[in-house]
Length: 294
Image (cartoon, rainbow, N blue to C red; front, side):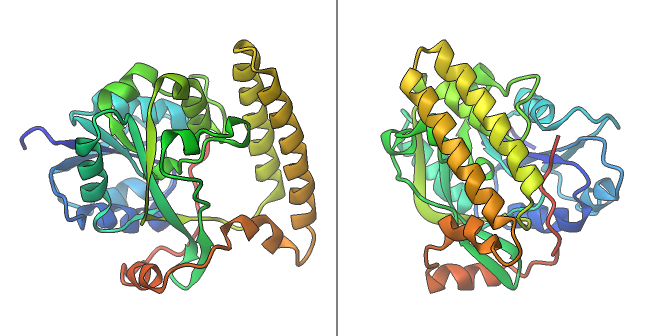
């Protein structure tokens, strides 16, 4: 195969239940000049067997039986990538057919943009659509307007220039459940981000779990404070602490019986009928929820 234009990094850990859908959604893209770097992180289920059912030569399966964590595998993919661009994908998410074509066209037309995301529909199964991931704007200034409240660019929707990823990489040791935010917060002062307003990704979301959510909140807060204090951004540090504890109060209420919907209110924006129809036409098979964790 000639050198691909896009390298798709797909880390996998015990993702057998959903991996087939994720890979198939990539292989059915309208844009075809890419490679898939499937990086297994020591799975103990049948993930490798699922990956090997696909005979497409663009799919490269990398495994060493070790469990190193998500950030390590993402960096491994960055270093192995042969494409001019790198795209992210998760083992349990679904690409809409035109995702890579539209992101590539934007990046080719805007050479000043380092990293591009897109809007995402949130789902639990083919029949259970939660809503839309919040959209805070298309420009770098809008995306990064409130870094104390996270930089809103859905991780598995990323596509960016390979040299940008290699310049920054993911932090090791990784920031558990916040490795994407650490990279964005570290890089945004010297980078340019953008986000397409079109829904091009289906993001699988598990049910609300208080213990995991609190771990993510405190992991993110510790990382934010580290960056803000080093940059002497004291107001941002104060805002991040205040907002985190407000969110924790909401989380604790959402954990009460019958209150889970409170956690998902931010995803309550009405979904266009055309997006729902396109999503349901993808014919999903995997119905479990399994985000890769460290």
